[in-house]
Image (cartoon, rainbow, N blue to C red; front, top):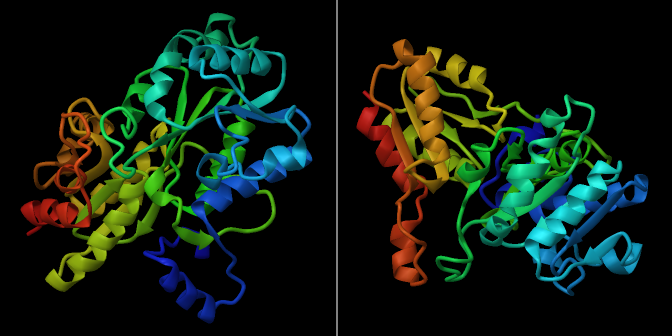
Length: 346
């Protein structure tokens, strides 16, 4: 299927289009913009709010032109008051609206943790399912342009530890559109995490409205020697690594988790039944990060399938540096995944 493919760059997608002219290419950012546009057109209960959503740049292009097209009552700029605007969005969700709250920097979502962790995540449970909180929060993470310690953190693990939240990290344009629509129509609060490094990625995206089921991972590339479980931007890096490993006679299976909570454990176990070896690639920190959660679950529930120690490729437990030289050492990529695979392949 064309939507399962991870294209390394625009030229690779153009080659695919030559073979199959029915493919429709959109960037990751335009897939989010298209999903938002179609939801605003089709559902009067849906609206967007957030700091800078009406700016000319439109949150890295993902909300560009929406205020002009739909008006400030449907796409509204908000004050720099993260906890307050999150409370307003939650209140709207409680009344039956389906708000999309955009946090341009996940770093400042920490100011909203009272509303997210103590209220939005808990109300359905506290009221025995009688109240739903259909709130979706877009959170942007990852490497910028020397954005450093307070503007480029990847805090997905923080949200996975809060019961009541769903956490998704789409890795392709197809999933960005389909999972955003699914998140909006989920009756639970969903943290929808985007890596800035994916915004220029191009992939096949159908024009119609469609959903991608939350809680289901996908095999991006089949293999027999090692399983590489990846999230978000690291899916692209894992795919590059798998291609490079072919030269060494190593067949790597790449799994895109897509949804961090609820986790698709079955897809990982089924892959390990074939490979017996596991590398986990995540763009969060190694200590206490999502890679640790995957490793823990496999150790508890599938240890007998392992032929070698689990390897993890994740960020070091230090604040993000601003220097380009230090950034190059701090962030991980395909080469690091290749090295991790070679440590256990054999």
